[in-house]
Image 1 (cartoon, one colour):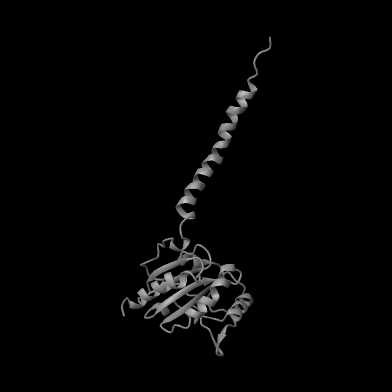
Image 2 (image 1 turned 120 degrees about the horizontal axis):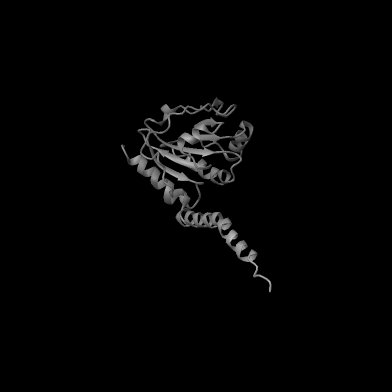
Length: 198
């Protein structure tokens, strides 16, 4: 009589520990999906809300002009006294192309100043982007190495911040400005910032 084979049982025993990392990963992915995947990404909270805007000076976009005058870079002092919309964008960012006409419309509101932070972009491409859609920004700072984006707590481009008259961040929108959220979300938050301290 031959002895029963134990190799099948031992192989099954070895497979279970090897599958543990995969099972753990799937469980974590499910948790993240239900916590973040089903929610509106523009509602991700920012640790900077209620805190002063980062005091990071950024150089201007070379060769960018408005009515013959060079468009200035970002000096943090501009955040005092006026409600500012700070938009982090790049020419290589697909959603940035979609939101650009909406930001151009927003730029017509003279109660606001629109500040652009150009993120890890080639200057020629950034200028072409603004030439194509129009330049809503009165100020464009170049964040060539991404350090300013880290200080602003940027998850990824595009992102838009509202900075109140006191220089404090009052709202953050993760993701693009869209026809659906520009009036129902962004303009509502802008109006709150304009009324505060007026």
